[in-house]
Image (cartoon, each protein chain N blue to C red):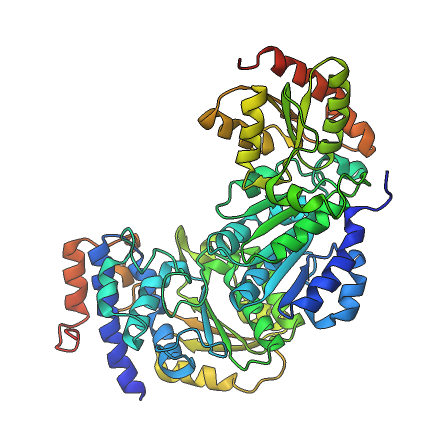
Amino acid sequence: MSDRIMMDLLDEVFVSLGSDDADLVILDADVASNWLTRFSGSFPDRYINLGMAELDAVATAAGMASAGKHVWLFSTAARLLGRGYDALRTAVAIPGLNVKMVVSHGGVSAGEDGAVAQMLEDLALTRSLPGVSVEVPSDCVSAEAILRRIAATSKPAYVRLTGEPMEYLYDDSTVKDAINVSIPLVEGTGVTICACGIMVHESLKAAAILKQQDISAEVIDCHSVAPLPERSILGSVHRTGCCVVAEEHSSRGGLGEAVASMLCRLYPVSVRFVSVDDRPGQSGSPNELLEYYGLTYQQIVGAAVEAWTMRRR
Amino acid sequence: MISSLEALAMSIRKDVVRMVGNARSGYVASALSVLDILVYLYEMELDVDPKNPKTRDRDRLIMGKGHGCPGLYAVLAHRGFFEREALWNFRRLGALLQGRPDGSRTPGVDVSSGAPGLALGIANGVALSMRMDGLKGRVFCVIGDGELQEGSLWESAMTSSHMALDSVTLVVDKNGDQMGGPVDSIKRLEPLEDKFRSFGWNVASADGHDFSSLDAAFSSIRDKNGRPSVIIAKTMRGKGVSFFEEGRKKDSGLSRMETERALEELGNGDRDER
């Protein structure tokens, strides 16, 4: 387990991106100043804290992007999407402006702050916006690679970071293919497990247990919730004939429904979700909450066995 | 100059009526209330070049009042940003002129807008970006008074003054009306000038249908002092068309008969057959 969390990366990554791109600007809705002290010290004119005013921050980002800036907007998921959705939809997504949103506090692992701070529907909201990329990295290496990759595009994007330390799954040599084509982390022929963020780690634990039960699981890191890595998932499901989707999100509208609707259209198989069912979050430690809401490897094992018994043969 | 603006505005009014009448949908009363303001801005204030609509140091206009876009389109057509013929396809599938301003489609439309309450934030963003790049262009933002009920506008009004964005000028088309009735009966804005002053703005007022009054107001805010400026322009919905001015006719499209009657009231001179 590494002690480094994704937010620790941001300063280094953005000092580097900011040095390469004079048009890069960071707007903060009063959340990220501690993550970005070196950036704001190095580029004081290009770091603006707009205060607790998320709608205004998204509208300002849209204005700056329309005048040629490459804008990165930082906040928490619940505040940015909860307050800023109107501006995000009308001023950023519909005109397709170059605004990237980077958030913390997605999912119940946001912990003790409780339900209001734990956004469980952010992937549904952003995934449904036309032309917006939605990314949920699963370790610090992929988080950096994803930030650098989307920095090179001029389209809107949403990146959900996790404040919990996570083991490294990638290194510099493996991350490129994983980010570009979502190659499986573990190969198998019995069941396809699609996951994003923290749930990729639980999926790997589940795959090890399933192996002992003679079910060989293939684990795909679906960091890109939109656009979905359809070919990787389909290629896997053609072999396995069944699928489990694990995400730290509501069962409505997130990665699970994205995968299910794609499979429904192209290759219908049995699909099981490991996600939060129709409940808000609550206070607790991140680990307690993940267990309470059924977001652990045990549930993935159970879901995989169910899906496997109903697999398409 | 001012008297020629009056004649011009009258002729453009008729295009607005024809446009909405032709589309059988759209908001003519809202467009007619803001029309003289737009004519003034595009003829007297804005430094823009229809031949090069995207020059980086141009002045910008951000139309918060999406309902008023027929007025904006008719003025842009007159300034030569696109052919006047495009007005007759307003709101149709594939049209250059969408039901809300669309910056990716329409030459002369700087930024997509039309969701109430967001335009000033967008204007601030444009102004911040231009200041970073050392560009001199000014940013004008036109909103309706009912829109000031949106809280986001006041978030943005704080940003404009905190960031000392003196290149931003907000123009409020104060026709006193919103969808559900008179603004002050739904949610009172007064004392509006004091509100803006207390937010750190320069404030001027004008009669939004009197070009000399608009001229005086814009002149009064020309000295930049590190503060954003607002011009509160008193207007009348449906200005020039009696059945809007006098009654509460719903602002939604025009029938053929209403179109003809409105054009008659606006005067059937030769000018309009441009």
